[in-house]
Amino acid sequence: MTGKQLLDDCFLHDKDRLRHHEALEILKQRLHCIAETETVPLQDAAERILADTVTAPRNVPLADNSAVDGYAFRNADFEEAGGFFRLEQRIAAGHASNADLGPWAAARIFTGAVMPPGADTVAMQEDCETHQQDGQDFVIVPQGLKTGANRRKAGEDVAEGTTLLNPGQRLRPQDIAAIASTGQADVSVYRKLKVALVSTGDELRRPGDLITLGDVYDSNHFLLRSLCATLPVEIDDLGILKDDADALEEVLSTAAASHDVILTTGGASRGEEDHMLKVLDKIGKRHMWQLAIKPGRPMMFGNIGSCVVLGLPGNPVAAMVCFLLYARPVFSVLGGGAFLEPQAFQVPAAFEVPKKKPDRREFYRAYLKPRPDGSLAAHKFQRDGSGLITGLREADGLIEIPEDVTSIRKGELVSFLPFSGFGLR
Ligand code: AMP
Ligand code: MG
Image 1 (cartoon, helix red, strand yellow):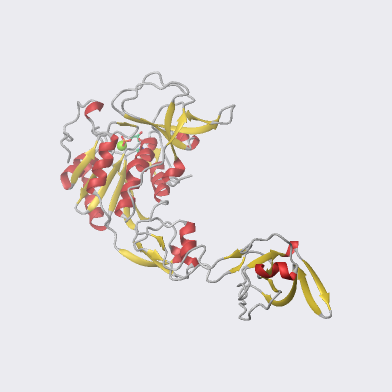
Image 2: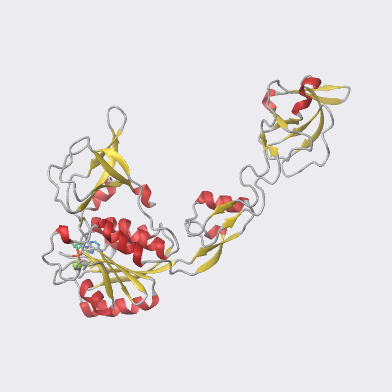
């Protein structure tokens, strides 16, 4: 715990709430990798977090080879041959030749085929002419090719013994391609985290169910499930829980015994019908609650036994912002990866904020649009309201406004956090 008074904060001003950077600090300090490792075939390795160093066991490519369809020759022969080479061999990809290239000789060669011993340069077939004289084939090679032109060197992509990837790296398609190119068929990764997903609220119904006045469809379940799809986690849907402390206590304590993380949404504030706080304090430990941010103030982090509890607010906008800012790095760290922090770009604001409350950090839903001169400016979703999924849809990122900023003028630089920096589109 920090020295801050976290428990009795009804009268706390934003100044006294936990700040965003303090919340990140708490998460960084308290969390570490909890996942064991497993070996998976490359076809199942996308988006997994690497547990071992990957070292190239051999050169890629294995041997010098041609980058084009054409004619391989020894560049030092060019002058004496006058560019006129006797055609001696034909080498297709996958069919290496052991025969030395004779003096003033060239080999017909195709893209990817191994260079014959003695050849160091390839002329593209489009630039060459072939002739037959007395039953012998010749090729006329153009002037001016440098030694090594159109030749790929052995190991030029990856040299044997090179470290390709380090533990903790998330495996992207190009990383998996690199591993495959060295011939390695499987890879050691951290196992997926077991995550229990819980929605809370008497008003919630699942899509497909009938609703009556006052009911709300549980969109957060689908929001969070989809956000989790960008991370190596396995979702266990625990459904919708009523606003009932006993029921919540029972479900959370049972879930804690068999999951790495419980991710809840709703019921995290201080209302009479919000029970997350009481239950977490009763059966677990709270490390963080009530942040000086907007949206997302009720964000909660704690543990029940060895299970991490992340209590997201119920408002969809707050739930998504808190997931990206706090839950995503938590999942990554627990699962063997880095504490993921978003990329931020400085972009001029296309909007004004005459008055912003001091002492809290605000996150606006935002998108970039070109100005008449072609440079990009950040636009803010105009309507306030933490329940509007429309703003999340129209946005392609967030604008982050620090605590000490109290107004924003048009053209002033603001931090834009693209959704792509959170692994989204
Ligand atoms: P709460 O955090 O429980 O006070 O909920 C705040 C607001 O978010 C209320 O308007 C809820 O109806 C709404 N809400 C809570 N949970 C969900 C959910 N799973 N899906 C959509 N809206 C929700
Ligand atoms: Mg509620």
